Length: 253
Length: 253
DNA sequence: TGTCAAGGCCTGTATAGACAAGTCAGCGCC
DNA sequence: GGCGCTGACTTGTCTATACAGGCCTTGACA
Image (tube, helix red, strand yellow):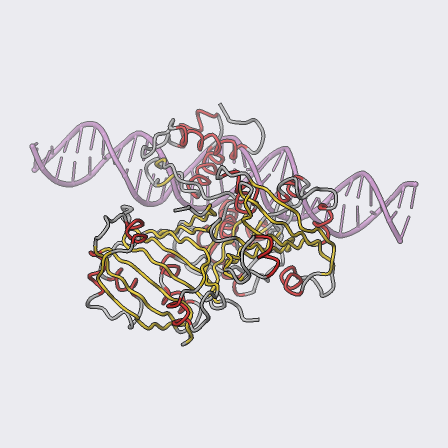
């Protein structure tokens, strides 16, 4: 009955339980079998069963308990690092077709804001990349990235219209490790308005991103401006401290 | 030696271990005492000790293990649930003075959007609370909340101008357990503009919030609109998958 | 002096049993 | 009919024990 035959017992149990929840065998919103029943079914003691249930509870697939069996809940899993960082991978993960139109790639002196975030002296060079990102062929976001020179040089022999810059950088061994996203709202300026095909002053969802190496050195500073009708960010958190973040296509309704 | 005398043993142990890490009693980067030593010191069996260590490991305060004792690590904690949910507690946590001016408290039929999110039939009653929230006396956010009737009735004998509604609800045993925040941008409407003292159509950072019980029943639906100059949200994530979220006062620079 | 194997220590995993505390249905009493 | 109480069931917590497997020091041997 178990999904696989290797690995610790509690891992096999938790994989099997998760399968049952996601397959609907344990319907959402309904209590799952009691610990005693599960022990009997798999012929194991209560320890591994509880450990498996605890794992699922931590991940949000089970809720409730104490005196009554916990309840199954299907949840969107937390988006992994790459999906959260890369527009291309994000779009693919939600079943949309990503696209891009590069506006410019340029080596120039860092803007004051980029220089400050990247820890560069005034006048140092960065590689700036400006792209319009599309979702199913429709404009969704304007991306302005400043890469430090050492990372940016990879962009000269890579066509940013062909896909994910991040995937390419990772492939070339650039150690993207940590990213801080700061979210706020801004009014569309003339460039945004023209690229996104909206009026000037239209509200846009802005995400400024500082991507760093494992040693904490900044590698890239980005300013992404989304049409709010195309994408939203979500933060899920619980009183126990679990936090899950995601970026989603705005539901049309 | 234990920090407090009530609560389950493993919780007391984990609180005590965390204290030792943060106080430097267990220096960062150095292995902590072995499970056997901790069992002996506290006179308990291995179960609760392991449970306490597992909690700290999940939160990132301990790393490593398997064959050798785990290593202590001090980390910036993720903002706890209450701080993220409550404007009042958030403001206090960043050293600002929270304020509020209640615009209205009303029992009325749920708006179509609120009814849909709360899983109510059309025409069911909710308690709506509209407040202007202030940071150091300056308008920062307009909050519109719809509470299901059973939760909302607590608001009749509580003055929402006096402080945190969430703290009061928790004190009265309302099981706020999980919250999903959806972030996007909207243009200020006439009401927003008047309350926040900005122009109509000014971009605002909108956070829609669905707060649920431990059983997953929706309890409150909220629509908060922040002045982007006053607050931002951040998401920190790493390639290893740890994610930390926060809400911050926008730096003035 | 360098290398490799042995053994001790430590965590990971699993079993079994016991009691506390919360939930809920059903019964009996008013 | 409605209320409250009881008791069965379930999860939460804790103890005790055992063995597998990773890690590291020690010591014998080349």
